[in-house]
Length: 309
Image (cartoon, rainbow, N blue to C red):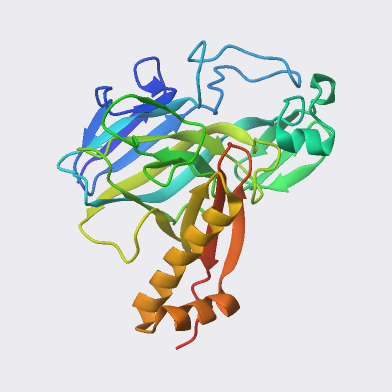
């Protein structure tokens, strides 16, 4: 097994998902990759004042500043790419934007006008596991990558903004911290993984559209599976097992996440789906993963100790 290293640079960074770009790295299943990504905006310098833009690595940009694609030799559709997050270390600064953009949610909150923008700048203390902003307020950090995904199809360039049931991408699930494994059904030969959008901290929903956005040094181990316990995108995290649903309709996203979790419970405990649904009703939490990206993300969370045997 080999340990590879990658830095965000003009030759490794990209702002779309595409299978038509040459891999920036080719790995073998079981290899480990340490990659430093920039913030979602791709800022190359720290912002000195809230709301003041600084240079970006990709200009102009169409989506998140990602590193990729990372090829996994021999990966093929029908297999599952397992991305295990060994370590995630945020950079020592970040930002959070809010308001000032004309979206349905901001209109409902009375924050669509540009004059209502309320950006925060953060100092991240990696050793202490905290971040503090210019208001004197702080949060505990729990670093993860907002975007981990594969091209949804073999041709074309695809936006990084909406999460997809095929390929994943902008999942924004706060449970994908160090120790978690994300399972992505392979969509194209060699898998072609893209990563980025580091978050030092985020609540379920990412309600302003941004988290504590930051650069991130991620160490991850890439493996291939021929079978998985459940269809679609799912994860095994320190908090528990997770299944996902993504759809423009919140009800449809919820139903997909729950349907996959019912399958997982039924298969694990050799019970019927109706029995598994009953167990889910008393053991599973349904959470809105994010509301920010034109597509609802919902995840079902089953804590590891929730079902006793």
